[in-house]
Length: 92
Image 1 (cartoon, one colour):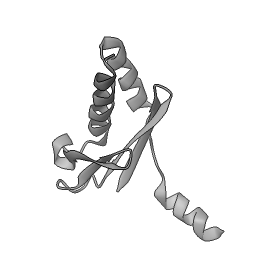
Image 2 (spheres, rainbow, N blue to C red):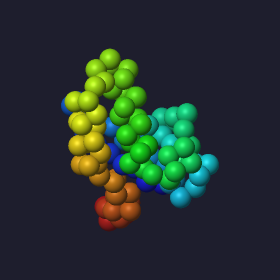
Image 3 (cartoon, one colour):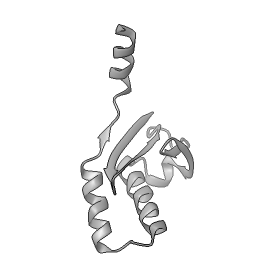
Image 4 (cartoon, one colour):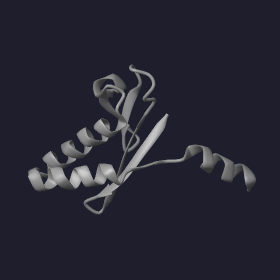
């Protein structure tokens, strides 16, 4: 399972799923979405793009400027490092 996070519009957004498994559900901010990994051809950046585009469309401010902001947010997205978090917790 991977988690990809980014910041845009003053908020943090994330997608997660097992992108090696076509039938794996994709989660948006930890909540199940209507999508499976196969819907994005196993591409986590595409999943994040769809999520952010949906958020922008719901706000009513979706235009070329917002598309560019979304692309920058995707370019700046980072993977959450679960393995390091688990190692740090076990050291405590």
